[in-house]
Image 1 (cartoon, rainbow, N blue to C red):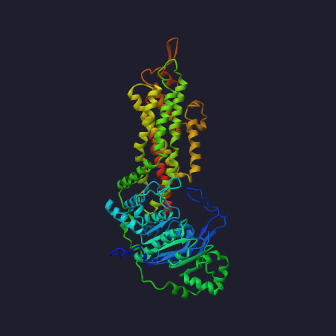
Image 2: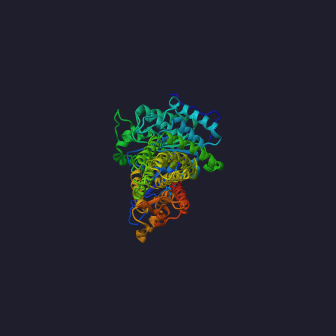
Length: 608
């Protein structure tokens, strides 16, 4: 059988052998999976063991398959080998070339592909690999482009390089192509060790065989150490595995070549049907195998014969310390991430097209409803115009929630990329903020241009510019608020519930429904934290401020209430026109900083 991937010319990369000794992983029953900031154990909670005294080995140039029924501990073992499980619950040893594993160094020489494909659906295959290469490789765009060209050929994706990935709502590439792309994303830095969770999950037999054949090529021709988990292996796939680790309830039933497993089964008195492969038979009947195979367990010498001899390998500590540094500077990271953000925003219909269309339509609809209310004395009613300001705020602050699923999708990819040292969390937050500045400015102008002049607000150009500036800061403030809570919440449903509840509370305490004087003292803090309060006051000061301001109420042709008098009644000063903007900018920076802290902490926990 000819393997499609050839060994690179002059390749002399360091190879790594991974071994576990008496590896045990316990999980407390009191662990709260929804807790974002950690978990704790209580003394009365009996720990549950996911893995118990696991001894196994993965060698360079070979594929080691971790197999077993659902709940056997396959993914947990792989995550521990990848260094993504908190070490506080793990006992035993993980050795890399006979030295204790340094998770930070190991992540630099390894790639970890999760079962879920963490990909941007609106990017093409080539763009996905290109951005990953630019973020993880030194040498600039030219080196990244050369590496992407190699990978497209190696993964046999050249014919679909320009195709978008797609998702449930938009058709894209096939499942097999998507799985190969996910593997390719973690191959851009040419890792020596590759760990893959369920590479054949959800694929037909032909696609599954194609994926595993590519992995076999990399192991054989490039000397990579490849470890994967598998649930339902086919006949052809089994021939590509060098070693099999069979798990049941967290314990190892077998570790070694497949023919040794078949030999042990026959010794134990099991008859394997012709239409069932050895591993599938063992997985389906693990309960009865536990006793039989323990009685016929080979001695250590037999296992060592199955492994054979391996030459001494260099230590992981010999990894060049310069490789631990980030491949790019802060500026370069922001530039690359900003380019990727912009592509995603402009291709996301529900974010770009829908948002801009929504702004234009809302501007014209509200403008025609409140048309010339401000300029026609016969129609002017103060409470109607105040209602317009309040409704505008409600629309502007609530219309940004559609960005929540986008932020949640990015967070999943961010955790994966930052845990592998691709870039800094701070660069992500800065790039995300900068990219939204021009986009949300466009949205603000599309809304303010029709609504301001149709409603007939103050006719001076400085009034329009200030109104537009306030609207721009409002949508930036709302966007920062959504970004902050998208970093915090576990899923979309909880996120929308929390954000809707907070927005409703902010509106209630804005001063529109209840004046500041009537708010109970123990709730007054909500008045000052309200995102509605400050822009609402800005709108009123901009419209009714000035030397005297416009006449708001008159009796028999005589004005009895000017704008400045109304502002005085509301406890507002002309100087608050700019100080309120400063507070709103403070909200933007504050929420962005909180977003950074939460994401940094999540990333730190993910790494350590």
